[in-house]
Amino acid sequence: MVLKIGVIGTGAIGQDHIRRITNTLSGGKIVAVTDVNQEQAKAVVKNQNLDAVIYDDGHELIKSEDVDAVVVTSWGPTHEEFVLAAIQAGKPVFCEKPLATTAEGCKRIVDAEITHGKPLVQVGYMRRYDTGYRALKKVIESGQIGEALMVHCAHRNPTVPDTYTGDMSIVDTFIHEIDVLRWLLNDDYVSVQIVAPRKTSKALEHLQDPIMVLLETKQGVRIDAEVFVNCQYGYDIQCQVVGETGIANLPEPSSVVLRSEAKKSTEILVDWKDRFIDSYDTELQDWINSTLKGEVNGPTAWDGYVAAVTSDACLEAKKSGNIVPISLGERPDFYYKTLTAAG
Ligand code: NAD
Ligand code: NAI
Ligand code: ISE
Image 1 (cartoon, helix red, strand yellow):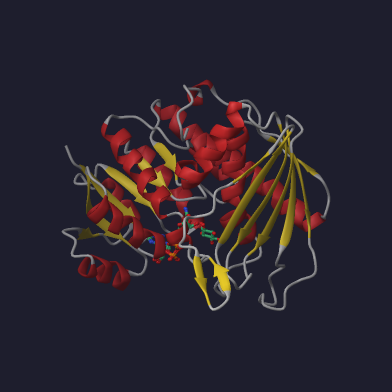
Image 2: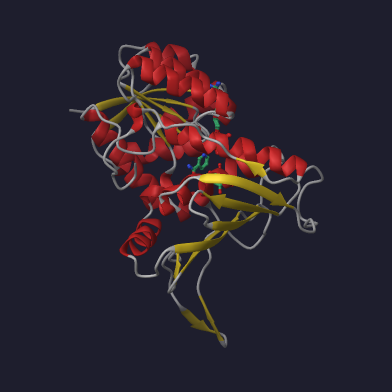
């Protein structure tokens, strides 16, 4: 059986997901696309040689009888409306992060899914599918470094476009660490503080860059994370877990070790598309497979909600400079299930 998929948002990641579903993965077919920029949607259908209908808007696409499942890759602020409409139509939906830009928005999605009575939503936190993060989690869970005490990490982008606003360093960028670190440590956050070092001259006027985020978890693990989105030199994701008896580092992407011109060097990637290419492939293949079985196997709407509560607290901490408490409430029974590799 083939899953007939409609994609809302044919920008950078929408095009990349369409390409992988069409050329790399199995079990899915792109039958419908839409974008507020209709010219772009048309160009994507033509350039990727798709046999897909172009819809005027996301709601028509969701309602179409030809569409079994929906992929939402439009801008973050539009996600909530499309995910709610997919739930309303009873259709499985893969939504790129963030699930919604506020905790209230995510809560509306959680409530709608529970009312529907069956899980339909997966959120695009693909780092849970990354072989490096999975290997790191395995080491932590094996007890080889004792209990985790501290985590040092960095999320560095070479540059960001002019449209990147101050809040996006949290809601668009750091949100990946928010999700993956609670999964990695099997823990949740209790507080956050954000401090701003000297600002780089390479960032636009409106943007405080870099920032340092300090999180504390329920089990007392302290996390320091640098978010630096104009670091110039590359796309660099670092994560080091300090345990009672040892230290575990996220593996670097594999790269040829070059000896040349009196130097030993390895390449640093510059684009998130390349850094996490395998994770996106595994994530979407898992989504197609589990959707065909009527299941949700990856990050759920609850994970999307937890990320949003945490990112709301981060925004408040960034503004005030204070230590801000993070309170999640009880996870609804609906979202308890056996722990899978990604869930
Ligand atoms: P983009 O701006 O390149 O693409 C977004 C597209 O959505 C645009 O083509 C835009 O015209 C379209 N769009 C916006 N509103 C729409 C609407 N109401 N209906 C239909 N189309 C609409 O952005 P992007 O880089 O592709 O990012 C898209 C989403 O993917 C964001 O939520 C982003 O956070 C997420 N993303 C995730 C990752 C990841 O690593 N998981 C990487 C990149 C982007
Ligand atoms: P983008 O700006 O390249 O693409 C967004 C697209 O959405 C644009 O083409 C825009 O026209 C379209 N769009 C906006 N509103 C729309 C609407 N109402 N209806 C239909 N289309 C609409 O952005 P990009 O980088 O592709 O990011 C899109 C989403 O993917 C974001 O939520 C982003 O956070 C997420 N993302 C996730 C990544 C990941 O690693 N998981 C990486 C990059 C982006
Ligand atoms: C983008 O949306 C992503 O998700 C990338 O993974 C991240 O590194 C980048 O900062 C975001 O803008």
